Amino acid sequence: MGRLFGTDGVRGVANADLTAEMALGLSVAAAHVLAEAGTFEGHRPTAVVGRDPRASGEFLEAAMVAGLASAGVDVLRVGVLPTPAVAHLTGALGADLGVMLSASHNAMPDNGIKFFARGGHKLADELEDRIESVYEEHRTGAPWDRPTGAGVGRVRDYEEGLDTYVAHLVGVLPNRLDGLRIVLDEAHGAAFRVSPEAFARAGAEVVTIGTQPDGLNINDGCGSTHLEQLKAAVVEHGAALGIAHDGDADRCLAVDHTGEEVDGDQILAVLALAMRERSALRSDTVVATVMSNLGFKLAMEREGIRFVQTAVGDRYVLEQMKQGGYALGGEQSGHVIALDHATTGDGTLTGLLLAARVAETGRPLRELASVMERLPQVLINVPDVDRTRVQASGELAAAVTEAERELGETGRVLLRPSGTEPLVRVMVEAADIDQARSVAERLADVVKSALG
Image (cartoon, rainbow, N blue to C red; front, side, top):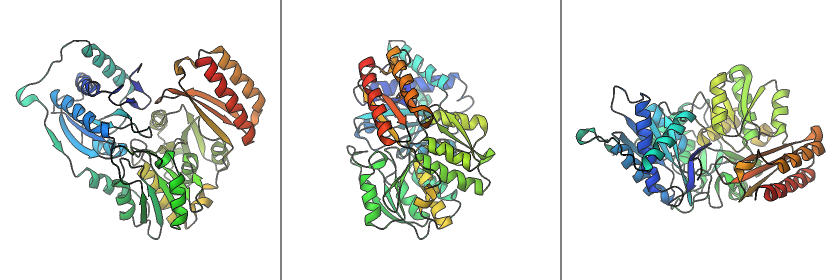
């Protein structure tokens, strides 16, 4: 797998790349590293552990819990809940560590491990590096210092987690959703109970799809990566809008009443204006990544809202938000962070806030989202190439330079290795969709020949 920790934790094919032995080893390493860092000083440590519904999550959870308890950490097992729920509960319960087992939007055979520090914030890069180093050291034979007797960790199920999290979500809404019919696609994932419950408590009339997880069907033809079912259901039920989550519900994409997609950039634009109206958009600034559509940047400039750009990955958005003291940020993919109410991207919260804006204004989502015009953008994922050589390839650099010359000021090129999957992403933006597609396909062919 190369370096274990990517931009969003450790991911791989469960039971091939990501094994029970690895989960156990990483959990013990995390406990030791946090103890060395003084996180556990003066008290008995506690961890919150949750997962999405993947079949592999069952054995990975068992390994993770066993490792933590063997290292002297008490474990609150919250079961199947979204990633942002685990982050919230880590903070709300005063836990020293949070662990989420999920591969997010990836296909069912994959799984992943994501650690949260005290307060529910993503673990710092240097701590992830140290955990990986300690894990490797002990994987090759160095013995662990293990507690015995009453020093071992205790494990219990924390069944109040869902209600605690839902109450938090509904409690931060600026207004209720009464009168809105909303279709929710839960991707047969971690939010299959949480999201419908939260929207219903907030007053919406809820229609659901993708709420029958069986351990094998997560993200399968549904959710934020496959909007076709949601688009059809919104039109069929005459709903005001539709909301789609991914497998661990840290993302949110939407569909307007006509069945048209509303992406993360548009959602950010709508929420930015709503928050500024309430004087909640600190410094009148929104943070987004280099993948954001040029139309988003132009819309924010027109509305007098400052746009701060980061590298791709919600962790980098979050870092910039914390550094600048900003309240709103996110990605085109639907990771939206409302930092006053969440420590990470929260798909359910994002959907609730978007629906609240529709209810508050009485305006259709289609009209609200028209604040920005999406310029044609083509994204091609090129698999089975050496993503580590992107920066070093002269052939690739020459091809990108030529593409940028062709597009001029009316478009742009972004070529980057994925941080979570073994592929390279080629994105081309242009005033004309045919030109964007032609340039993107040409660059994808160069990626294959140069890095294949």
